[in-house]
Image (cartoon, rainbow, N blue to C red; front, top):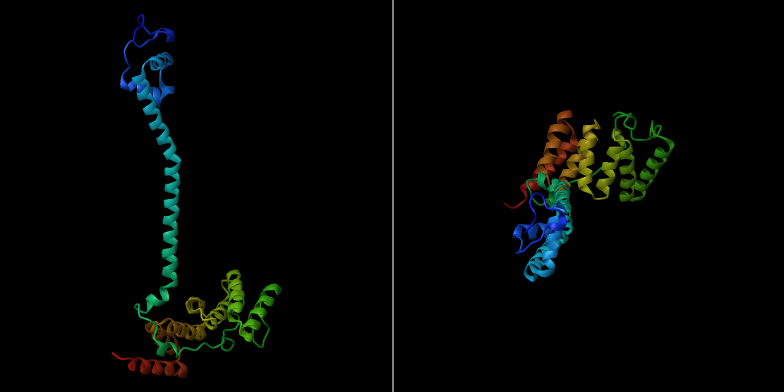
Length: 271
């Protein structure tokens, strides 16, 4: 490159030989960072030097290819993130759906034990006030105390569905009510019963457990024990019968009878 000393003006720069590789790389990849005079001189040199022009073209194609891969790389990274999130969600969903089976030490449901399960409608023996914002199912008395007129109509529709055998429809109506009134144990208990009659025993187990935690007493414990039986979790059923029902009432004939039947059923299983 020749110039007249000092900082050469852009028009005075010229390459008599091929410029260094670093200059060609800057021209192809980072032209905005180059001195305008040097940039012009490199451009003039490339016009008359086929070898340097080929090298610059090669570098330009490489830079363009790298830039073209950028959006694809970001798209693939985003897709990988979505797949990872989906995997985590699927894992938790499968774990939630399979928790009933896992509770029973992974054993398959025992047909003999499952046949002992029965679910009674929770109208009788439910603590008064369970449809208020604290710990009654509507019975012969005033229905749905504390509920709005619309909610009371929805509850009546759910009970009518139960009466007609449309258990899944009743469960959907009660699920909606329970979401709006999560503290009303009576709704939760009736939802657990509807889920059990619809043969969604995992949901029944979940709702009976929630109703028990809300103080719904022996009805919730009895339903939970029977839901455990239908899920194959014999240990859970025994625990509910002995630690909860019989702890409240050691003379509970229904609980004692189910324990006897359960023991006889287990004794009949071939070893």
